[in-house]
Image 1 (tube, rainbow, N blue to C red):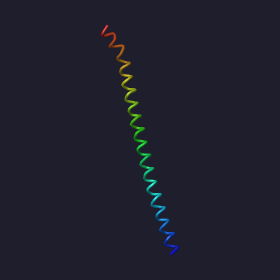
Image 2 (image 1 turned 180 degrees about the horizontal axis):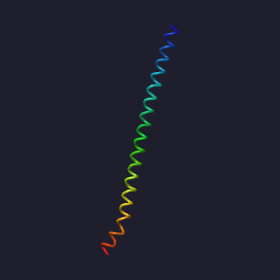
Image 3 (image 1 turned 90 degrees about the horizontal axis):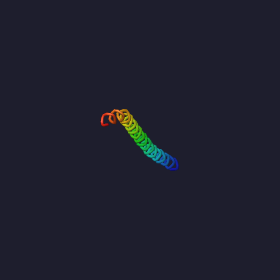
Image 4 (image 1 turned 30 degrees about the horizontal axis):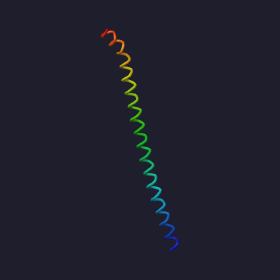
Length: 64
């Protein structure tokens, strides 16, 4: 009887460990994706600012 209780508690522990590990992996993946999204957005914004700054001189001379 004690053997069955011990095995079932070990199975329960492993199942809880699996669930927690699965949730942590999901959290890490979501954080990684959000960082990539922010990083890609920053790169896009930086590129947009570079284009604006390079055309600002041309636009100001064109409108003057």
